[in-house]
Length: 309
Ligand code: KMH
Ligand code: ZN
Image (cartoon, rainbow, N blue to C red; front, side):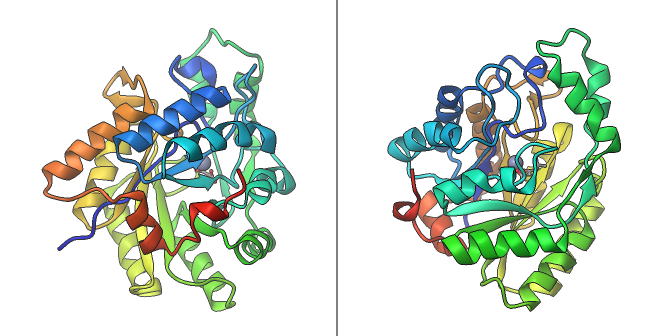
């Protein structure tokens, strides 16, 4: 029997900006509603970022996370996964603040440095809601998303060993799988490892099915049966890559962090709509969707009762 598919939903992220969609969750109340809707639709894991409620800019303040994590915990049993990627341009300390404050079951860990080019999106809009939006996107023309070995060691020790938090290892290219293997070799991590393969970021590996198959082959070789794998693809590739991951026996991530669309040219009205769509595809393939309890067991999570909300 194939394993049930673990759906992660990332409802807002730090990539898109408010001008791009009127449906992008911004305030803590909106992020809480979006998360609860996604959980209700079938997401077992919710990958969380915060935004400034007035401007929509990615914001590291733990008090903002607390404002949506409490209602999510009260209203669902979904696993909360706190981003340590934050918003491009934040310091390492800023990126870690919310996870250190909340001690979550899961946190993202970006397993290598890369160019992270958002600037092509700036050309698509000319009537911005906020001045920071085009500046933020243009800044990425000369920006490296820094995740050095020192950063990785720091985060793994601080959050993993310090808080019992387990990681969504975000791998944007083949070398990142080897970076993760190196971290494991140091004895700093315990299996199972949850590898999130990321396709279609300008600076990372392209959204090409051959790449997905190759990364999966190499991950199998490096991590054997000690890992669970999941796939996300940015923009128009989101649904097709999520579908391909499910067909190949993997897990998947959707959400407005990675795509604002439900179909070609159609802005998604909500995160729940994306989860509902991919759930329908998964079930039509004869596969089941994992519950949060199943995800917790398979990923070896410490339990929602050990999160500070
Ligand atoms: N939007 C993803 C491609 C993080 O939060 O740590 C990047 C991401 C990073 O999810
Ligand atoms: Zn994220």
